[in-house]
Figure 1 (cartoon, rainbow, N blue to C red):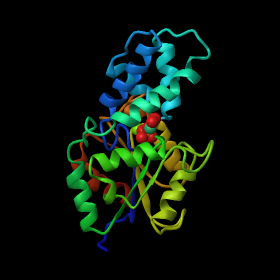
Figure 2 (cartoon, rainbow, N blue to C red; figure 1 turned 180 degrees about the vertical axis):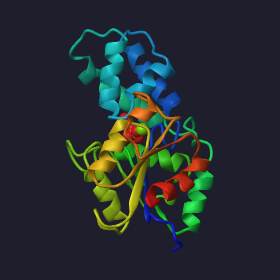
Figure 3 (cartoon, rainbow, N blue to C red; figure 1 turned 180 degrees about the horizontal axis):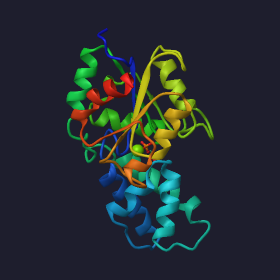
Figure 4 (tube, protein in one colour; figure 1 turned 45 degrees about the vertical axis):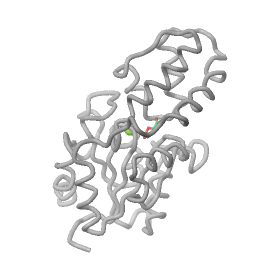
Length: 229
Ligand SMILES: O=C(O)COP(=O)(O)O
Ligand SMILES: [Mg+2]
């Protein structure tokens, strides 16, 4: 181990690791089409991502003009089937990510995923893009049980445990694109870096993150800087 200050780095998935917005948009619009509603743009859908698929569809149905209270229950399985069948090839990693991951590997830092996606979709997606073996663990929105997804600290604590560490003790940091990421990390007592290129729900400087990066080239020096504060 080098002098790098963190032993574990956790990544959010959608909007932080991979740009999943084309595939999420395709699945939402497939579902809205079957519901007889007009499609939404990728830019409209991005801010709906971050609290899981059910939340994304609920907001999407409302935005597209749905008035049927049963629609969410009826169309969620359709969205999930479509997404599960199509996810993978259209979700590229953000620029500089693979180089940053290689540097973490060379320093012996463990990498992990904590997403509000269903665990099975996160695993399938990471497998399709060839990154699954690079992560010590993948915690999904359903891994810890109901009500125990980000912004709760439970999935962050579990990430630290599954990486062989101890929550509250082992030095770890997180990176994400939403306020739920920042809240989860801070609830677990670890710092959070925000990416300015994600699926922002609000201006990135209002997320309360410890630092902001515009490109993955800045990630490692930024972590060193926040650890020295
Ligand atoms: O809302 C989702 O499906 C997941 O989003 P996340 O990977 O940004 O947590
Ligand atoms: Mg995200």
